[in-house]
Length: 224
Image 1 (tube, rainbow, N blue to C red):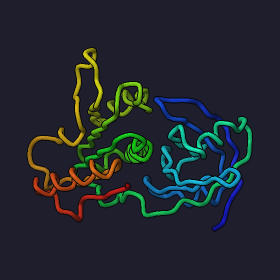
Image 2: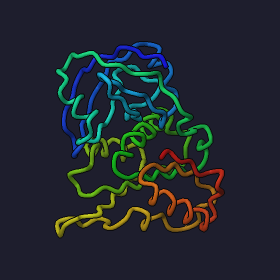
Image 3: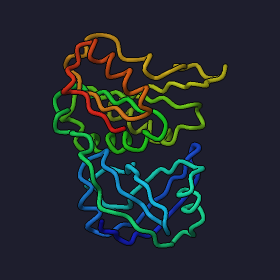
Image 4: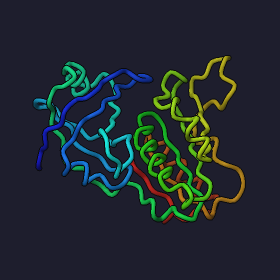
């Protein structure tokens, strides 16, 4: 495994997660070609995989979300801004955007799956006309766990529907509540390509429901 030095540019707490921006060398940036790919991040003896939240093929830092409370995240939080850590090149197939062109694109995510789905959306926005309707169904515990809520107005302007479901929404929340898999779109879905990321139980239930609604299994892509 080849490790490259990366520089920690920013780090901040966002929606119950740690959002970090890394300056990565050209080989790492060039290897990130599809949303949903992941890089390994290492500091000291600790390492783990993370799917970038930024779009592939775009200049700028690599954006990552770290779930708090793990040894690796604790170690990363202890690093000062400007510190050096190690990353690998991006690996994994990621989500096949080419397959979704000309079709309806349904994105379903929960928890830290917000990161790769943001990458998908930002990549779609670069070539928005190539896709038909784009709908994001996002399930999180409560509104405080929406990591990219500030991006939603720009997504909406580009014709990307965003539907948030809170599993612990209080009386002040007028939107969807419960499990995200209970809120699939109405109507026929046979011409839909679906990208899924989140807890295994949620993903398994959504796959079953989509197939029952006429979506071919070959048009459902997972990033567990």
